[in-house]
Image (cartoon, rainbow, N blue to C red; front, top):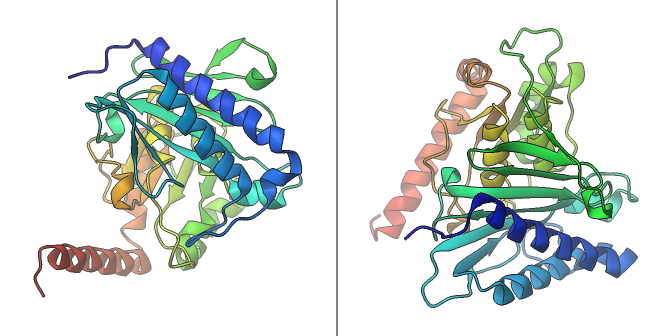
Length: 318
């Protein structure tokens, strides 16, 4: 069964939930930055506040929906027979909320898909609300990607997003961002490209909307965090996929394949290695160059072996 709402109706649910969480976090003031106990990474009172706001919203929405988020240990179902899902990260850029003095980017990202166990391609609408600026970046499947600057502060004029026209890795104007934290010791490999014009702003959603808006040409992220408890799951990637695709870009795995048919499987802690690029041609070129680097080849070999061992363990075999 498919979800019965139109793209705009689905988007309105995402927008209402994002605005509710925005107001809830701002209502906490400086308390939102207070750290709470967690088993893997920084978690603040702001994260907890958004979890509660989203849970309450979808409970009262009447949607036959399941909610998956980074902070929820288990998905929440609000129907006996759910037919759709909401996936999100309560606050992407928690480090920036905690330490950024109100100047570094952070915010909520949320999308709604027409499947209970969605693939990246299954999202009908998604949005990222950056809390400092109040800017809303959103996309509707088949209808494009857009930004409303200052939306959370009452503005309503939208502008369509398009990726840049850069298609070659040797373009002198190329802007590359690498997720330095999640790449760990692999980050140094990308520094010759990143150091020219890019960086790492510690907010995956922002990096993806930068690709969608033409501010960044390629964004590279992986699952190699120095903190062994922190893994690269798909709560931002899945929603960013719709934004990047609708703006004309592409999101590929490190084998060079489009990720649209991959399950997000947030509840299973599935991990990802991604290149988001302004065009598919550029993404393929980035991946091709990565495949020539011995450290990455060895790293991916070890990852594949570890995944195989994990699968055999689940099957009860040694």
